Image (tube, rainbow, N blue to C red):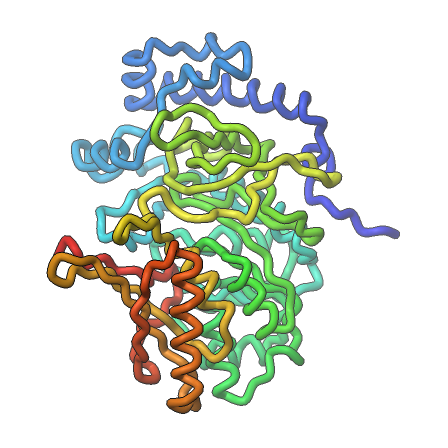
Length: 438
């Protein structure tokens, strides 16, 4: 008997016209629900002159006002602790999760009902099944299980799918390596940064991951550049799959499938994902870079309509049996990540793509600072402990050359960090610091 390739064969292969009709029907119901029960949407819909019955065609989506993170946080501040977006109070919820807070700002707090949490697991099942995970697998979740939503939904998705699930919380990195080996894990979930850290620690322990049982690494929590993904696959001897989610929706909205058609599929039967010009707010076409705007149909406790995410993406149509659109290369950055250094645009993802193309680098950090009347950018690199002075000199020169070539000749100062000196990250990595405003 041939194993089915789709978690939900009907909706994953819907013709585009039928899919659009389904989304529009769900959107109308969601707008009615939010307007009737959420103080925030009741007010903002009225201010925009929008009524759910106006949603007759696809173009009518633009009648719905945008929601921003700043609005949500202001609502929390004015109506603590959850703000005016939720349709119920904490007495009707079973979970509360927060954003990771890596930006240093107040985290968003989101409530979930039992129904919401079951839906979040279902979204992860789409991704896990598409990556080839099956009930016979043993899944290891290398995650800290705190209030940050992280891989909570993936854990429940593994259980819902029927895989044996090992929670890797409250463990040191060496302990996690030993558990991966001892339990015979075949699937490991972590951030891209932590997947590399696990592989480095395994090497130091004399554990050869390439000859081990792991065949799939599920990545989430950070944008995944192609070079980093390739490095993870080489070190683990396994296929790596990109996914992305948000605390604001409690789960993932996209996943990379086993056929890996050059991007990650949007889960379009449960989300509407628009891509807009971040300045004008106008929707852009296929192949154009823009900002993600997310509408989620699944989380009933905290409705999300036309939420500006600040994620930068390029949407392209699918050319496989799965008809859902793709984000080419996944999440390619953040609207607020770009830095201007002496007239040159600098993106953290572009720097990482170059750094990860070199062997024998354990970690790195980027620092932008003001020296006199001039901006300077420094790449601090921690090479492997065994690297001598001569190979380090060649590595530093090659890095400086390639970084300048990719940034209109901008000079990067390359510094060597002592072994173990740079920070390691289990969740979202923060590798760029702008000191010019300090």
